[in-house]
Image (cartoon, rainbow, N blue to C red; front, side, top):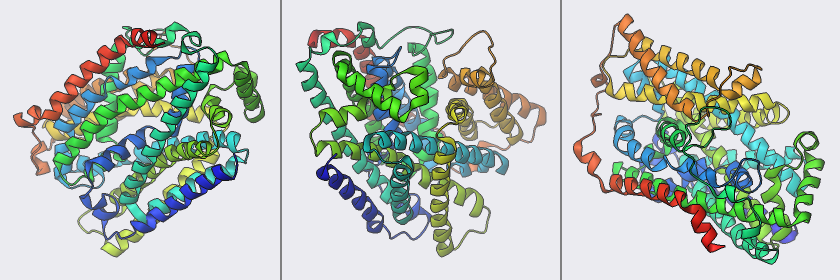
Length: 551
């Protein structure tokens, strides 16, 4: 990097410090955590995508497609269930949540069940989000350390401090508009890597000579049960459906964006946009990964650079596994892009990390304030509410930074536990909200038991946890199935325990209209998403032939 690149990075960081000042006028919870419920579909859709498409996706997904053993374009199968999930959230999940007027979505659960149910979901959300965000920040900081050749302590602080400052000052409006800008920067970065990767690959032999043909396969009709049975069509559609419905509809980080919309029509538009835009974006960075991975294969010096940097910054990993595939994109940025674009791509990596962290810190603050300080009949005065909210943002920012230092590095077991918790918890969370909305036969005792038992069973089935405790059950289940398993177990246990204990509270006690209407199923967005689901499956099936015809 030269002075031009550093100037671009500095300009970006200063600009985001100013973002919070621009949106500093926040009077109450609706302003600070929901953007005054005045946000439009375009910035919210970009913010939703930016939160999910983190810097790890920008770096690791292309590496998976281009270099990693057993990788390839099958990464696209993660997108199969997205249109169906957006449709379900649009019709079933969001209308009652939006009409309830809550800030923390876990308040909705308390209205139907009990404060203990709300606390279970809130505490697990806060712990898992803070840990996973800390690990994400560390992972990106250590990559930036290798690129910028500065200690990772400084890269952690660069990402964290600036993100916390503009989130603290500007609230949800700063977070959403910051995410929108960062998403545009990330898209430009992918496009630049795509173009320059193609140009350089053409000079060394072209795409046709640089990859194993098996890397083009997207659809595999396996069931995800047994050794090496992964990324199958059925587990990715069924398990992925429950994963995305829970993540986008019942996770505070994402649902808070939906609740910030000005009306339900805006929510339908942003869900439609997210359902349609994700696949092209993921297709673009997967294709970029195929191109740059082919360039690595055909350029011995490139692979040597990856090995040298791995040995320098990740010596233990180099000794065990050789070259670190995740360095493919950072080294491409430094080796093949002109100055100016190098700075822009570093900004792209920073953008992806900061967008994920800003969303998390804001959501953690909303949950902690609403679920612990502003509960009950007596609410905090507006001035005190804002003080507590801003202090909470600083607190959770510090916690995320602390987690990055404490658990990001050598604590590999912690990283694996975080990933396992993410996959085992989404199913029970989804069931909690669905039963809160539509069932009169479940009480809080049954629901609490369903959550706990489903999570424990999922942990036992999780191959990740089996590896940590060194237990082999003799069979393996692809982790995405755990979302479906969690749904079934939580449902059964909740109904059985509720039947045995009685004392049920009716869903109608929520005091809002929750049942979907026939007209909700006949919105044009519903039909568009159904057609798009069919399109991406058919397109993915024929993708190997399409790519082969091009190259």
